[in-house]
Amino acid sequence: MTNTLKKNISKLLLLLFCFNSSLPLFAGTIKAGSAVSVRLDQTLSSNNSSVGAIVYFTVVNDVFDTEGNVVIKTGAKAEGTVTSVKAASLLGQAGSIGISVNTVTAIDGTRIPVQAISSGSGEDKMVVSIILGLLCILGFLMKGGDAELNSNTVIPTRTLGDFDISLN
Image 1: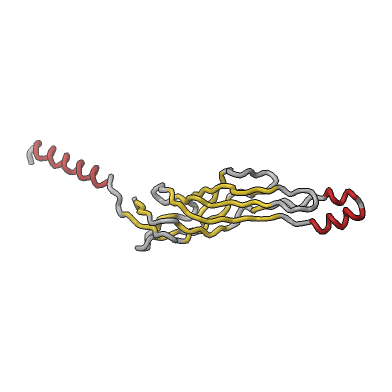
Image 2: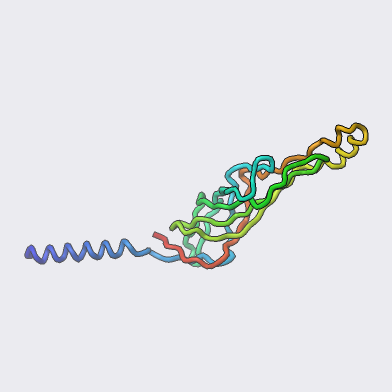
C-alpha cells in the first residue's frame, strides 16, 4: 500500500470513530406516570426546617424504559423542597412538616420532573395540656411534639412526562 492510501484510510477510520462516539448508543424513553421510589437522605424536623429548603433523596430501584433498558439507576440523586412547616406550640399543639419530590436524575444527567408529597406530624398533647392546665396553670405551657420525617423514609413518585434518555 502506498503511504497516501494508508494516510487516507487512517483519516477515514479516525473520522468514523469520532463521529460514532459522539452519537448516543440508544435513546430510551421513560413514559409519563412511570414509578420511581426515592429514599429521604436526611432526617427533617419541624423544629429546625424552613419552607423552601432543598431536600435530597436517593433512588431505591432501577427504572426501565419501554424496551427494558435502565434509564434511572439505583442510587441516582433526586431533589425536592420543604413545602410546609408548623412548629410545635403551647397548649400541646403538634408540629407538622411537608415535603415534595421535584426531580430525579436519569443515567444521562437529564433531570426528570416527578411528583410526590410526604408529610409528618408530631404528637398532639392538647388534651393533656388542658387537663394539666386546669389543675395547674403551668400545664397550659406544655408544647406538642415536633414532627419528623426520618432518613430512609421511602416515597413513591411518578414521572410527569415522556422523556428520551441517552444510554451511552
